[in-house]
Every structure is written in structure tokens, then in C-alpha cells.
Length: 44
Image (cartoon, rainbow, N blue to C red; front, side):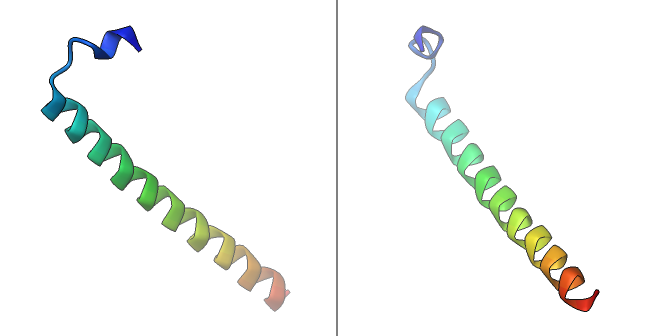
């Protein structure tokens, strides 16, 4: 974590915001994929 000591607060907040958004998108995509697999299994 020492590499973060020289990073400005605003930059840390910006990166955290970006990662939070990416995480939400990935989680949503995972649910979409699981729902599609469930739909396909039910149709089989």
C-alpha cells in the first residue's frame, strides 16, 4: 500500500469510483449470464 501514499486524494477517489462502477457492471453481467443459463436449462 505504500505506492498509494504519494497519490492525491482526488485521484484515489476517482479510481475508487471507477472500480465501483466496473464492479457493479460486472455483477450485473454475471446475473444476466446466470439467468440466461437458467433459461436455457429450463428450455432443454
